[in-house]
Amino acid sequence: MKTRSKILIVDDAELNRSLLADILGEKYDILEAENGLQAISQIERNKHDIALVLLDIVMPEVDGFEVLAI
Figure 1 (spheres, helix red, strand yellow):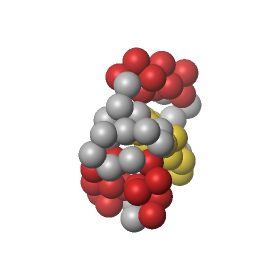
Figure 2: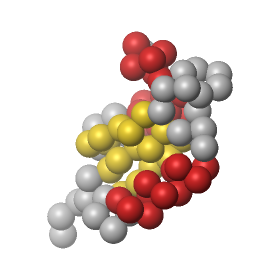
Figure 3: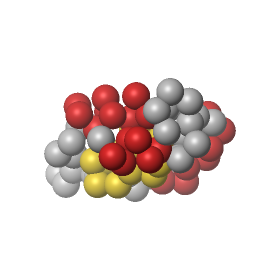
Figure 4: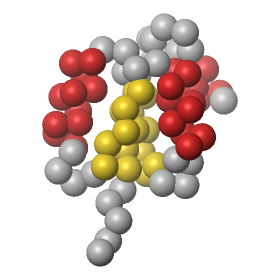
């Protein structure tokens, strides 16, 4: 059985994450993070499995640009 690609959706708005997960969930395994710190943690845990990161820029704690820099 072929493994599905994983997409990490990073957005502080739950509605945005939910909409994207609904749209993409049939073809991809979805990981979610509501802020940059959670995103970094998800990336560290799944670094070999994530095919794509959909990253919001304006977020609390750590913004999208800081996530990219890390």
